[in-house]
Length: 435
Image 1 (tube, rainbow, N blue to C red):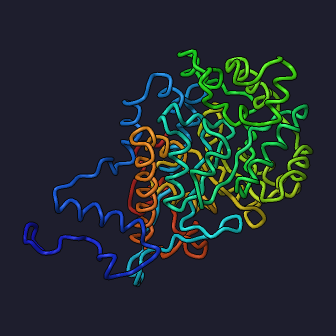
Image 2 (image 1 turned 180 degrees about the vertical axis):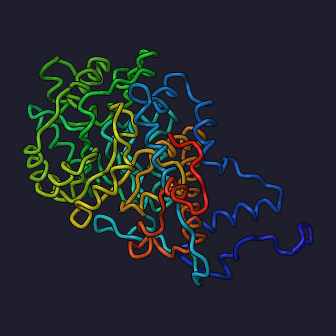
């Protein structure tokens, strides 16, 4: 078909002619090209590599440094990205298909349209005035689980209302034992508000060494704007304890209350494995431990009876000089993948990254910085766009690689090759510079 011939220029079958409930991502591409026929261009770029650049241009110096920044010299975050380039997806041809790749899966007992969830990111109002409310709405509209951070700018209840019938989980920054009553209160509130799983972050009992934030003298949790501390400010047990200690209500002195909440949520010191029992006694749903980076710790997670783990190094934001999250993923999967639900985050930028993490054994991939960039670029619409784009690229990446679904029988390590291995032991070549 010649360009400009006036014939149908769609490069994909029309969804109406090929009803396929699992082709939601491809439908977005078709929608964009259809609008292009009327000379309409999308408001947001589809180039995942540009989301960061464009978002950072819009943000204040403080907000930019907070989301882009990392621990130390950025060694861990750079390793996260480099790890994805070490693996390549090998496409197979003449795999006969009659529909697009099926992204549907089941995670923690819930049927999902794709193996993707929103990572728990706090202080979202520093990126857009609507913050977590906008993200929770976007996640629900796209059928993607939303994980609410303890460090949110909106209450547990308000985010639940915005999320409506969406699937939502609660992430805990874990107070010390002296504040077990505060922890129990948050868990009770989350359960009442329809959060069905508990994600416990293990690597952030104190903020890491973050030079970009320190250069700006910026800690979002210590301001008097309620950003990052709203869950504490709206907690009845914390309110009671604050009044007993300071003789005033939380709303009478936001600065003092923020400092008190930060000392409550970020104690400076880690819990022990034995303390998980308290959470199990106060939460009757799945418990997922976030921040696992070693096989040894993953095995302990099995022993103590939690339901899942997140293989994560906090996107390189907490500890520098660490290993890549993707690098350790297959080793953890080999050790405990048949006993735990394995979530993955740290370094995800695009649909191909998601495919590689799933092929290496992850059951579900968490999206962090990319959705934040969408939020900065366009609020709820921006987050919607990023989620649709990631699902669409994942769908087409698998479809064009001859991978018919995200089921582990078809999407596994057999579809990957280590890129550097392709250049070793090639017949007929000579190593000219041997030493």
